Image (cartoon, rainbow, N blue to C red; front, side):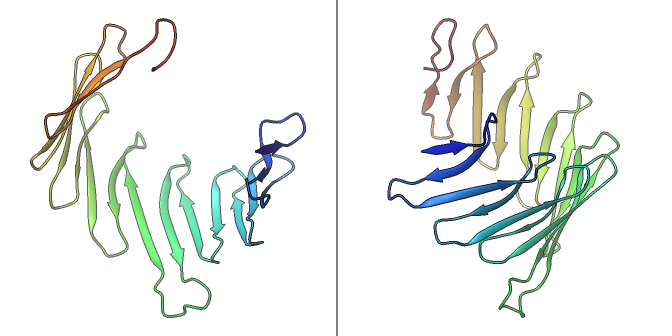
Amino acid sequence: RYEYLDNLPLPRRRINPDASQVNYRYDNGRLLLTGIENQRNEHYQLDYYPNGLLRLEIGFDGGTTGYKYDLNGQLLEKTQYPTPGYPDQPRLITAYQRDSAGRLLLKTLPDGSQIRYSYDSLGRLTRVHDGDRPLIFQYDLQDRLITEHQGQVTLRYQYDAQGRLRACQLPDGNRLTYYYRQGAGLT
């Protein structure tokens, strides 16, 4: 079960079925999550830039990840630093390049491999290419995703008159059908 901060929808503590606890800490001004203490008394820490974007996270294992952003708040770089006690681990940097609209164009992974992203004139993601098999997206006239295709695998989506997802045809020909209650959500 969860216990919440007074008059706020933020969890303060999670009490597990075995009575162990996970505690959550927030900064006082912005109510951003700054720490988690798990049932083994290990700590996960989060630190933010003044604008509220995540600057640094330190995992339960002590592994540290840093983040850098552009002036629009778009992620430019993620750096994973060596875990304490493992000095031979390299620093791993993932870099992100974006267009003037903030859309991701290129992701360069720590090993130097690159993933390229393409968009149509309406700004919809149409292609993700990792140098091996591109993932292609197609949309209908209402801007709904209707096809995902990669190599020999295709997913097809159908929608009802209200624009809700009605069915998904899987690569093996099986079909997932979605049903909705009138005036309610997915059943």
